[in-house]
Length: 277
Ligand SMILES: [Fe+2]
Image (cartoon, protein in one colour):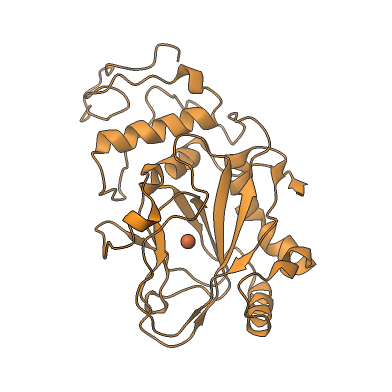
């Protein structure tokens, strides 16, 4: 395994947002000349595992070590992160029905975040080409793929429509699939993982005044349509505490207490704020 370190680029709010949704999309972060090289490589090597790319300088320097992407990964996985040892290309060809919903083999569930699943789209992906479809917040939901494949359209899903050179960073266990493609053409989608090598600690960009007790753990403007909002908030808060290295301080009373947001603009301290904060 190769290791790497750099400055983190995410703030408290962005790390917490990732805990809530289970993914983040970085649009057009890879330069166009590299996107062209990646597309040419895929056309000349259409196999599923283009492993030699991990020994190719232009790919490693601009995709695997892409400044925006690896800075975000560094924020989530800590210093001295483990670099991908495997790369796949999920290459779609032509109009096809949606893939079955699934999570990838090796998924674990809970507050720990020890590896990330990342996708790079050199040509981007329009809706008609079958972009990756994700269920926001589903990274906390255990279900074997054999029990979720039969679901069709699920309300609240997110289609990762994106311009060329975009990178999608996801919690490994998130429910996803390739959505239906309705037009001819090739869609390249390179997939690889990064790994944690150090214990979690809050060493991303700290926001002045950010307070764990009053932080917004609710889903906010994006839809999480799968569970009760209190359950989403509870799990996002626990992952955020774990990432911050203070999982031992995490407590959950339940009911309408912290971290559920029931203030409605009225200033009062909710019940259930962890005593150790
Ligand atoms: Fe998958």
